[in-house]
Length: 469
Image 1 (cartoon, one colour):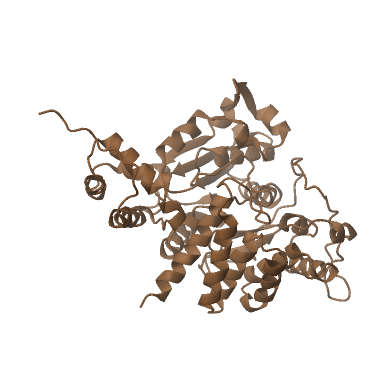
Image 2: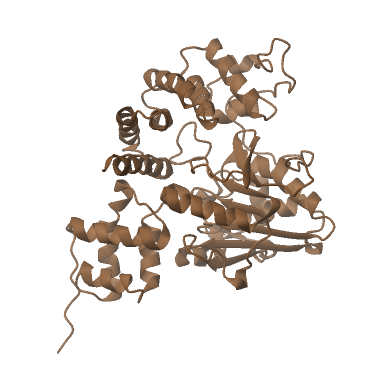
């Protein structure tokens, strides 16, 4: 008897089938897929049906649930998330790595000349290769060091692309031209990474939600730096904190963890401590006993990067005698404010950043982005009550700022006003509705619409689950 043809349908999946697939993805990968991302199932499942040769979605589900085709389940999980990445992504993070993190690591490892770094959720490789380039710029003689740079992802096609190390123009949208000329060679309409840098990175498949974080052949601990950016926005709260605990355990004492701008905050008291740098909050493993606080090396010169349209001079780092903080640069009162500009206008500590934001609000009380910045800083400090007023004003003055509505929703949720939180997050969803997934979001320091959209949906999902008896 001849095999029956595979059924290919464009109709929407039955809600029960969709729920079963989503539950399986969350169980195996820790991914809490938003309503927006779940829409991809309607196209992804029929594609997998064709690849696996099955007749119905239920047949495919049974195959995946029994663990007989883990590759197809990984493909499904990858298609439900936004694999947005590019070289030198999130300017404040790059500057923090150049100025503070890498110099501190290199200084601490001078005796044994050994470095261990990990890009967790590396996608197609731009992030770990950026780390490799930054390391080469930090070290006088890179070959004299024992460097292990691990890059892991759950998507095997993404890992294959990373190993090829050939990229199109879109991957270089924040890359200094000098870097591209030095470390890449033309390959038709694309650019191929030079071999010495490519060989610095080891790619490996890894499910971050698995019980055993790292197989023995990949190493188990003692990393100097782990980047896990814009990964946990897709995780459930429980899976997120479980992963943070494992990442902290994998760090060497005084090792660094870098998360994405919208990733949930680690709740690991006594294990991970926040370090506030210009435009970024990083996390450091608790220092070994007998040392005081993070080890910070002197700043090193930055790579010349494209600056904002209104470059701002750096303000003096010493607080003013009045106690109101460093004086706000005069051009700041005229500039179109965003987070990176304001943070760049001061020396780097969180208190000074908030003081600048407060001064900006006083100088331009009708400027929405000044209120947004102040509100987000207060929210980051855990002062949700104080953040509410600033974020309300930001949404009133500029209803198009999705980040303001998102921040307001978070603040309302933290103070227990679930109804107002739901309304603000729904408004953020509406503002983001027409934005392409890869479109940068104003005020987010490199975050794109797809990632903020998922963070919004995760907050709404949390509200729905909390409201159930």
